[in-house]
Amino acid sequence: MRVKTYEAASMQEALAMIKEEMGEEASILSNKTRHRTRPDGSRETYMEVTAAVDEANLPEPALPVITDGTYGLRPPLASTTGRSATHAKAAKTASIANSSLPQPPAWQIPKFPQKQLAPEPSVDLQPIRRELVEIRGAVEALKEQEARNSSIYSQLDQLKTMLNRIRHGMAGAPHQLPPALMSLYGDLAANDVDPTTAVRLCEYTQRALVDQGGEENIEPDKVRIFMRRVISDFIPIAAPIQLDPNKVQVAALVGPTGVGKTTTIAKLAAYAKLNLKQKVALLSMDTFRIGGADQLQQYAQILQVPVHVIITVDDLKNALNFYQNHALVLIDTPGHQQGETDRLEQLGTFLEALPLVETHLVLSATAKPRDLIEVEQRYERLRPNRLIFTKLDETCTYGPILSTVIRVKRPLSYLGTGQEIPQDLELATSRRIADLILPPAQVAP
Image 1 (spheres, rainbow, N blue to C red):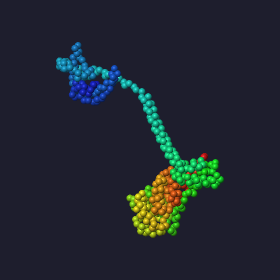
Image 2 (cartoon, helix red, strand yellow):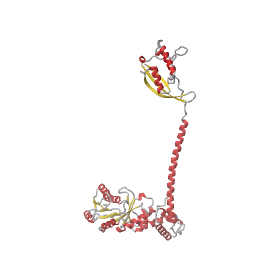
Image 3 (cartoon, rainbow, N blue to C red):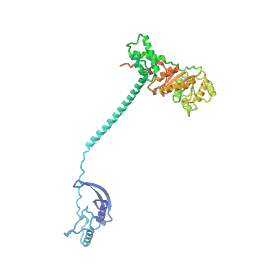
Image 4 (cartoon, one colour):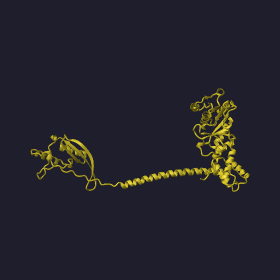
């Protein structure tokens, strides 16, 4: 077996060389594309092809005759494609003429050493790596700076909003207020207390200060304490739902869609059942909304309390008679949007059939002051005697709670502070509202 590696400018040229030297029986073992640098510095691409042939099938080499009468050998990189027809014919003639001469065996044919490839020039990559590290560090620094800028812009927007609220509220503030009260008036305005209510609180606080011996040079912390007392006096608070094991207590929750009536009912039911160990039943009038009663039924199944769906007034009366041995019956009602006066009238007819029912109007602490005014006017038809504010955990201003309680002259019963049942429902207290409207002064450590 004879194996030889050929170098040629192209694959076709290499195959021609192999065919001429090894014959048709040669086999290609491998072929690779190589690159090298010429003496003049330019780059050259060539093919490196390795072929093999059984020496029994090796053709007799055609040795061209050189003019000096000696035998010559074609170097490996000699190309056959550029020879002229005359030269080819002369080579063929010389081959025929010398065919009778003894040919040396293949192993005696001298092999010329292959040309050594010039080594690739070495490149120092360390400066490039350092530059990439510096670029990466600069990009990370820009990202951090952008995040800090976003936080600063957010804080500036909040301050701008607060200043606008204070500026809007200051327009109605009496200029004769002492500086300490003017500062508190700004705090009330920033907490979305409407200007009229804020002025009234300042005036009542000023009177209380005068009754205590004057307001000149009084400490701001003391002024704050006085105003917190005035706020507490302004807030009517309802007693919690009273439970009597010998008498059923009925409470209905009304209000617009999405304020959390069903969740609040679940909290009340869970507290009465689990903490007070009282028998509780649930009634649902929410048949207008798709799946309206499903959520209440899920809560009832978890708490293991009965639930009854009400469609007519007779259904309501029959259900109350059936649950006379329960301490508490809670009624979930559908929400109503603006313009749904017919449904609201129908709900009023249902509640009129229950003269002893406690009706709690449920409002969201996240609602805008104008929306709260519209809702309370719309639900005045149902004559609610209690107020419940929910979603206190979803807002940072609580002034509308105070303004609404003062405007509608209804006591506040419960506050919803989250979604957890039953712990995120607390009894409303005047001090709790005062803490939300005007937090106590921070004591320095």
